[in-house]
Image (cartoon, rainbow over all chains, first blue to last red; front, side, top):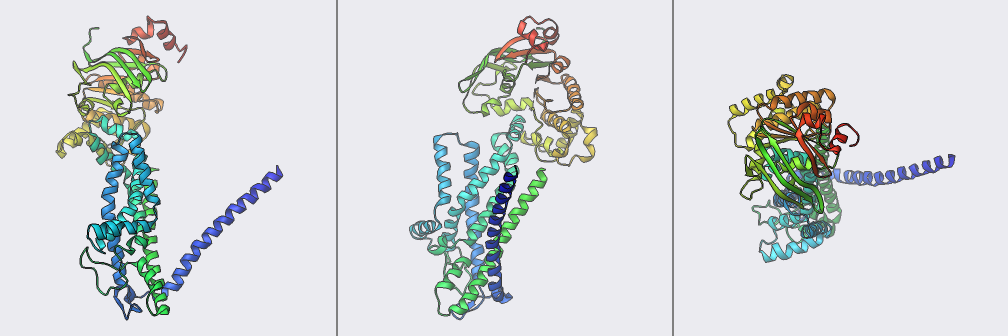
Length: 283
Length: 253
C-alpha cells in the first residue's frame, strides 16, 4: 500500500519533469527570438524596402509577400478541400475506393514539404509556365495544406450529430439543403480552426516556395500574381546563408523571425479563441 | 375496420444486411386516428415506423420487400420523390433534436426549404404551430433565443411544432417521451390527443400505459413480426394471442 503510494509519486514527478522540459524549450525559443529580434524591429523595419544589399532598411516586401502567398494558398485550398471533404463525408459510398482516397489524403500530409517544392517547380513553374511567381507558390502551398483542411473539415462534419441531419430530412429538406443549411453551419467552427492552422502552416513554410515563388532581394512590391516575391521564412534562410555582411544580416534575420512568430502565434490564438467560444456555446 | 386507411403496409419485409428485421408486416394507419406500436426493444417497431417516411434508406445495405402506400400510392415507387414523402409524413424523434438556431428559425426552416418565402406567412405559421404544440405561451417572449436553452420537454414540443409547421398529413412519433420526465410526458400525450383531430398519427412507444392512453389502434411487434393488431381496447383487455397478453400484462419485455 505504502509502496504503491511512493511509486505513484515518482511517476507523477517524472511526468511533471517532462512537462517542465517541454515548457523550457518552448519558453527558450520565444525568449531568444524576442531578445535577439526586438532590436531590429522599428516602424521603418516594418514599412520600408531593403537597402544597401540587404544590410539596411526594412523587410516590408517580405511581410507583404508572405501575406499574399498565405491568402493565395487558402483561396485555392479552402474551396477545394471543403468540397472534397463534403463529398467524402456526406456523399461517397463507403467502400474500398473511398478508403483508398482517404488513405492517400492522409499520406499526402506526410510528404516532406521540399517534395511539394519540387512538384511545384515541375508542374506550376515549368509545365504550366506560371514561372517563379505568387501563383506558383500559392498553388504549391495550397496543395501542402489540402490534407489539413480536408481532415479538419471531415472531422467537423462527422461531429455534427446524425439526429440533426434526420430532423432536417424529415421536414422535407433535400440532402444538399440539409448539408448547406444545417450541417455546414454547425461544422463551421471546426472548419475555421482547420483553416487557421493551415494559415499558420503556410506562413512559416520555406521549402515549398524555395523554387516556386521566393526571391531573396526585391526592392519592389509584387504587381501581379505572376511576380516573384520575398517571403519571411525564405528571407531568414537567405539572410543567414548568402550576402556579404553576416553580422548585420543576422540581426535582420532575427527581426524577421520575430515578426513571423508573432504572425503565426497570433493566428493560432484566434483558432484557440474560436474553439473556446464554440465550447461555451455548446455547453 | 370502419376507419379509412391513410397508410397501408402490405407484406413488408426489411433487412439490415443479413439481418431480417421485419417479417411480413401488414398494418393500416387509419386517418385521424392514433396507431400505437408496442413491443420489446429490438422488435422492429422503430424500423417499421421509419419506413413510413423513408428514413431507413439513409442507412446503407438495407433491403425492402413488400409495399407501403400513402393514399393508395406506393411510396417506394421509383417515380416518387422521398423528399415529397417526408414533407407529407412528418416525424418526431426519440431524442429532442432542435437545430442549434433560434426557436423562430427552428420552425421557419421547414417552411423555407419547402419554398415559403413571405416573411408574413412564415411569422404567422411559426406562431400557429407553437400554439398547436402548446408551447406558445411559455416561450412567446423569447422566440429569438437559442432553442438549446429550452428544457427537454419544451425542446420536444418545439420539434413537434417544427413538424406541424410544414403541414404534414401524417405524423410519426418515434418514442417521443423516452427521454422526458412524467410532467412533460403528460403534456406530449395531451398534445397527441389534440392533434389527431387534424392529423393521422403513428406512435412507437415502450410504455404500454402510454399506448393505452393515447391510441385507438395498437400493433404488438415481437422479433420482427406483427403478432397482433387490433383496437387498443381489445389489445389491452382481450388480446387473442397469448404472447400479446403476456406482454401487456407485464409478464415479459
